[in-house]
Length: 164
Image (cartoon, rainbow, N blue to C red; front, side, top):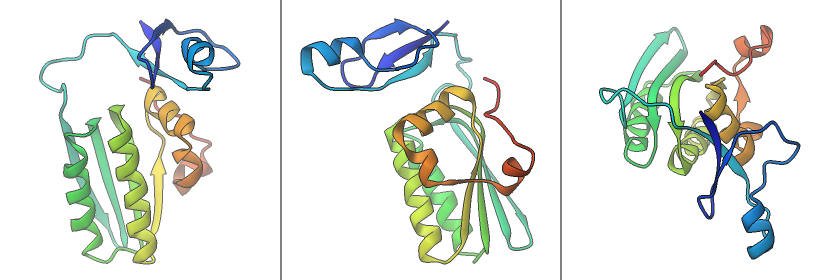
């Protein structure tokens, strides 16, 4: 079942398509507008829980980093290492494919923004292919999606977030 969780107080609410995804508890008690993020209580296979798998494909001057699993505080360094290795080879374009990412926390968001910054330093293009709906929603709510470009392929075909 999909639910909404408050980033500040942890309140869980049933998922409802509402105009506002703000925590009612934080609005009333703290007088703060805190976003709710979608979370799933569906069981995850123990074999993949907490793991991040990284695969890099090189096609000429374009490097694509494919992520699957969870991009969080424990796995963000794995992604950052793959990024540094890829950037050291001097690509003209780096694409981050997040279709396989099942969960992402603020460490993952920071790692994506750091990746964008690293690419800007190296004058390398940087784009992100759409993620699964809950992860894509996290990108949108946090404002990171507006800071990173969608890949040209995603734009050309009007791609939507990957199904979860």
